[in-house]
Image 1 (cartoon, rainbow, N blue to C red):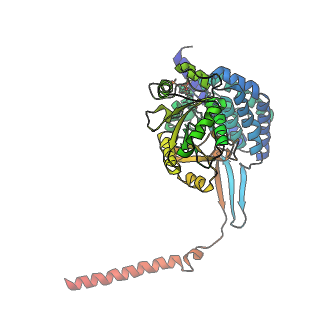
Image 2: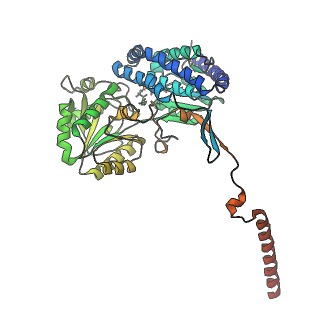
Image 3: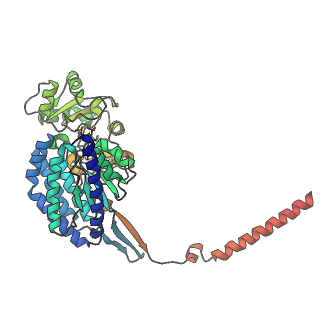
Length: 487
Ligand SMILES: CC(=O)SCCNC(=O)CCNC(=O)[C@H](O)C(C)(C)COP(=O)(O)OP(=O)(O)OC[C@H]1O[C@@H](n2cnc3c(N)ncnc32)[C@H](O)[C@@H]1OP(=O)(O)O
């Protein structure tokens, strides 16, 4: 098949998928929460069973990350997520305030178009499907081309499990003839209600151009601030565990460390002890050249690769047990590769005089990239933590925790999510860890509780308006008379 025929077929398939999804969603919209929950529970169980196999397949197909960490993410996106959402009321009457006589009704948005990234193809696909069905929506996926086989396999498992429990056919589906034109056709279709996109920077523009509400999990660039009162050993252990998790491909992960001057040497010593390699300026330059392509986009060749492999590619000799590569930096600028998100186990290291200067450095980093995403502070001073949290342009401030795991809600009580909103600061409309509640509209019901007189303080509003018009007419007539007498 030639390219044009392939693209046309993709567009045709997209139209059929959305039409089928629309019909299926009409049936789904009438399902009570309990029935949706049974379907979600069944899906979670089935993918949980396949979590290991899918983790291995994902690493093999994409070459990103480590299957062992992907297994953790897959368990988190299935078993852990299901347990977290199973008691949530999302559709039907979800809230009632008897005293104020109002009621909230959760209404599914309709048909969701979802794009998972190549970096987290399994966990993001499971997560998006579970939250979409939990909230009574149909969902049509456009798999990432670099993870097409893996995403197809995950979805086949989910679809089979869900349909066994009564999910209408077409409520979960995916584009088999994959092309950009087909993906755009999914987004532009009149029956598509919302686009849920994670990663895939090149498709974000198409999503916004479609004019559909778009929830986007975009780039992070979160610094980790180590304040003088921090438990340095724990802070360093957290940062290393986080930065090496799945070889650094989760967007919430730390991209830099900002340490206060008075503890900087101790932090460096601990980092070295835990397997960090501090590069020389010349080595930093060499590695820095590998991070981005000529158009400024991230080079997929370095994404999700272990530190030793990155060092080898840059011709840097490092001990075999090196876990992260660190570059000491002073300034933040768009041209500095160490001041941007890299999705691999590399960190910039900044030293600042005090916590206020560190605060400024963190803001500079976030304005450079990752505005609205995530940042982490290691401190035992509650006052500093609170002041720090008040001033940062982020949607998540994580405290004394590994950012990768804290941001997605594994080591914190944030909602377990693989789409992390960056809010208005990041050009999106939600700052949430996206949950089923982001995939519904809330119909507000209000009963009659007061009369207009209760607001106007007993003044008869209608008559008063007429009276004042009469008064005005009378006043005007008098003024005109006076004016006529003068001339
Ligand atoms: C919780 C989380 O951590 S999730 C967020 C994870 N973070 C990210 O994914 C970071 C952002 N991602 C990236 O920067 C890139 O995707 C990388 C660096 C990881 C990989 O880069 P690449 O391999 O070049 O893949 P990229 O995602 O840009 O897509 C490659 C091509 O596939 C296309 N493509 C991607 N998804 C689709 C789709 N669903 N349908 C059709 N085409 C698609 C892209 O448009 C691009 O097209 P092009 O080659 O014509 O330019």
